[in-house]
Image (cartoon, rainbow, N blue to C red; front, top):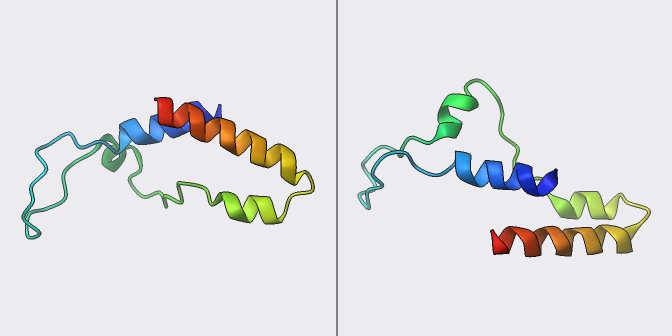
Length: 74
């Protein structure tokens, strides 16, 4: 589920319009602009906060490594 959520986040933040190099041009539209109207977006989740509060540090490290590997392959 986490990997699918991360892939969804990547896809929803890809620009729908032309991306300009000019700093004075407006930011390009993304699907997230329409989906997240009025919502605070705290993504991506800070894994280090979870790791510091966790009892099973090793299992979380393994899971994070696996998720990072899957996401990089995507």
